[in-house]
View 1: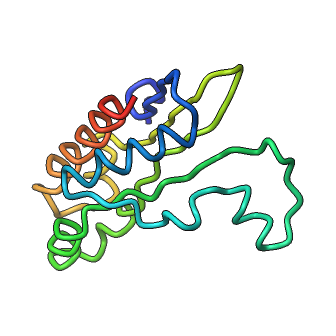
View 2: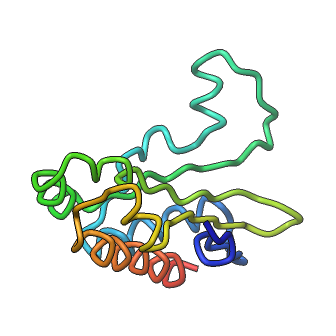
Length: 138
């Protein structure tokens, strides 16, 4: 895994809340959904489970999915499920809103889901689209 290729790391002048809102709108425009809108604010989620976190804890973990494409993909091969959870992380650091998105390269995908030659290219397109949606929401 090459960190510089697979970790998409950008920032924005927008607040965490504003970026999350804008990203949700952009995702919807391209038929993606944020599956966990009610639990992506990790401060609230952790507190609901009894964890103590500071009031300024502002990590949001957005689970991004394209349900129609995912259903078709998994119908072909359940082994693909290991790549289905796609998370966009949003948090504050040094006075800026930070966005992180981790993907995999085609060679790694092919190794983890062997005998599925079309999937690495298809998944690479999805990863690229999510990165472009991040940029559009910034």
